[in-house]
Image (cartoon, rainbow, N blue to C red; front, side):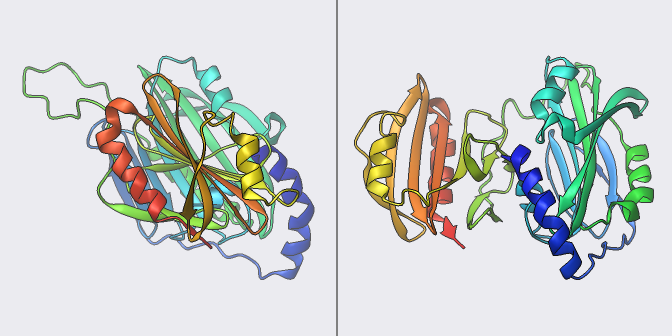
Length: 333
């Protein structure tokens, strides 16, 4: 979806920039350092930015609170800047990982070699016109031991140049994850993936919002034919919430849509329910052994909202209640 969105943004962005107020960067007021309690990776970030972390996996900071969704769907919104550091334990070759991690079309990137914390790295830079001016950013990938570390910085509103001195400081501050040495002491590290947090936060998408566990992250997705979408996931990749938004202007009859999609979603008879106060249908089925799935379909403002709740059957006690709470909190906006 983002591969085609760039073209649209380039067409309308220039028109809107000339009419709107010039975006202003958020001044940086001091610095703080985040050090991960599990992997010991570390990075400096602006002290006045809102931030969050998933221990062992991710650190995220943003200049304007509440602007996170703009970095998923790249439409209109606050002229924010973001910093994100991720650590992924993987055996995948770096080039393969980079290829699969790309959000935009290949020709949107400029690739070059660099270093990160003294390790040879690959840097992908990108920029394109957005409604408030130039959107510009980069992502650096470095592989060391059994980890791939990524550091990404991006800014809307033609504000990237303002942050260049800060970017140099941030990249120079990076400490890569450390491999834990064997120890006879009692191991207090997590024995497996972290379950959903009992604390929930509201996150917004294209025309909707919902509450998710605060240790979940948001990932942009590129579903075939979708006009928008996000995936919400924690530390298990087989337990996720996914929202696809499709154009329904040619067909708004929910019963007809449900019947047309019946074979795709298990072949069973859908249940009539409510989603965010509007009529919806629910399919419940198992796409493969050991995996459970619920799919909600609802039409709002000539858009089809398709929501997948997927979980590993062995993790049902942890994830099913969290997903039920998330779907109950769903609102159209």
